Length: 342
Image 1 (tube, rainbow, N blue to C red):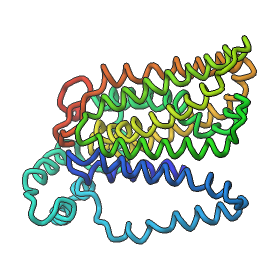
Image 2: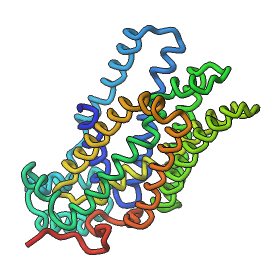
Image 3: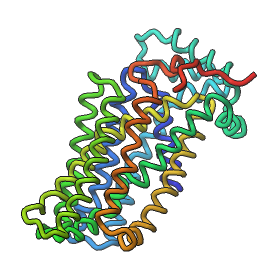
Image 4: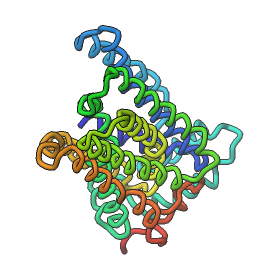
């Protein structure tokens, strides 16, 4: 729950403080740091540390960013919902630089804050159920459930057991480090490309690759039943592609989550999405082994691939492109300007 809260707050803060041209790569850097954090326990285990030593190491590393958080100003958009107009200008100058013109952005933020109302928790919750926000929230919620039930989260959680199912001769723990390194490299690639490419093509390509890779794992288990030789590379290649695609798609997708939700309910909406994704991930983790027994290894991974194939079509046809567009000018996914109900 704490991780979901931190993830929601960090996404909201990143989206609200970055300018329209840097939201993508800044969130990509955040994703690189998260991926490195996932790699630390694997490296610690390979280095011979026990679980107590590994836990202590992770605890110490998590304390490092805290002092820097005390030096950062609040989001200018959050400050505007609290009526702290002077602090809004100070925050904008901090993030944009003293020499940048901030009056037009300040005016846009003020206009949106007046249109959408106060930022208290009750108003934020009610805004989630108003048109057109509820439509956007419904699509994002459906996507989150699919991603955590049939996306890369399964591979991250069950990476070693999945590799053990394939009976590969390579040490699964060594492969896990290689897989997470591919995730870090792909996130760095996203940071480099997001300046030049729009958000949706990277997200769609990542989701398609993930879906096809799950299908490749399912095909491997089908061929294994027929004792086909020379296919031991297939599951390893598929897992590498899944985690590489994760690094290319997810930074942009999580940025888009914050961009598509209005200012007045952004943090509450993202927190609700993270909690729903967490619940979906727990359900997936609890049912994974039962599905292997009930459906078989091949059918289970083919099911995950088919489920994940829904995501690229939703992004392609139901979400608008957000790259290079100011938050206050974004429209909802029906093409209408954001507004509150009268």
